[in-house]
Length: 288
Image: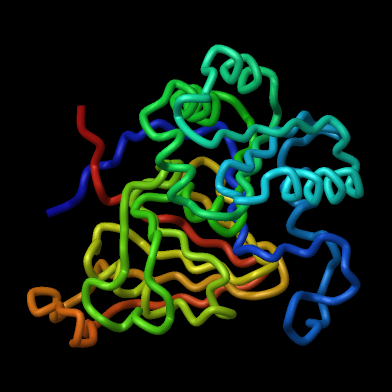
């Protein structure tokens, strides 16, 4: 059967999804050998350049962080290095302190939004189902704004979203915890710090249990830039790993347990680096 064209709206906005530990001006990469094409501040400059403005208005969302003041100061300092001086901070500790009228005005006036790292569940629990998130998505779909995220802030942009399960338990069935993310990328699971924290198996398990989705593992100081919702380009000093489960022929999903490792056959893996392109599949038709 030939699949019909998927008539999802084409976003006018751009996503810059970062694997964490992006270079903030240091002369050396974080915790790895310096590649020959290393560029300081490359990932964050890509975020700025995506706005097509010399000094864009940026809102840094620190809600995921347990140290929001320190986190904001860090990004304020590094953004000023690359010419962004018009910077605001958005931080909420609960849904109760979310003044949506005030937030809607700030969403209306900003050129870009940056979700900082921390705990991705704080982002989904705080903003899921709010007019704040709806307004942000509306602008992303209809206007050429930029949505960036790093580490937990990157993972929250996708659905499904991993929120628990480290390298010590990732091979065990059921030990990877997954929920609904903010859905700027639907049917995509983002994982970050990917090579440094050995997260291939946890992403693969997520895709085995959600084979409609594609997994994108992004290493540190590396990002994907997504335009039109599906057109992806890799930027930065390391790798992006794509885990594609559409062709899975067998797995032990029905036998998952906490003491038995996951198995799967015919997963497809792509390894991409700076400048490589990838078309994010859309095989799940929308419904009304």
